[in-house]
Length: 176
Image (tube, rainbow, N blue to C red; front, side):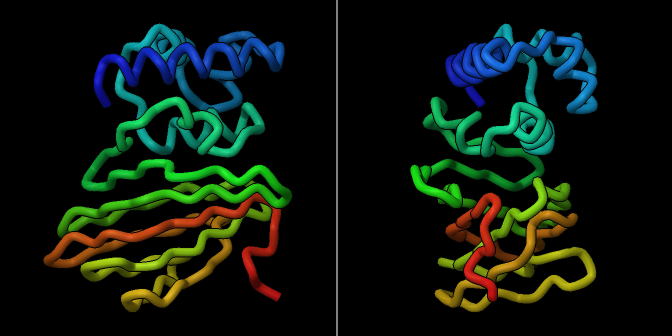
């Protein structure tokens, strides 16, 4: 993430925290990160992981997309890049992301908030994704939906994969 994006994320994070009446210590403790790291992040320094940003969003009780909405560059780590495309305004809340996974990537994602669903549509390449122990290979253009309120993985082999990811918070993800 570039310097301007880090600064924008930090100021937005600080505003969300203050609006909710949380101290640095309270948010850092709840998210499981050091207070000094949160302070650096709010100042536009540091290099937050995707999991750290997720944990902060959960503790602030906002969708991941709300926390990263002011940033126009992809966020990434360890071969994975994500960029918010659109946020829904209705209930349940739906966010849509572009995602790219480099060759030989294995991303272990933490469980999201209860009732969160992911729907993945593979655009190119090969990707296996889903809850740990139940991941399945995706087929081009065929959406796969799973409960994301449990740990899950994204895994590529020899080629990169590009996909659309739709996250539904508190909904049934289209599942009966």
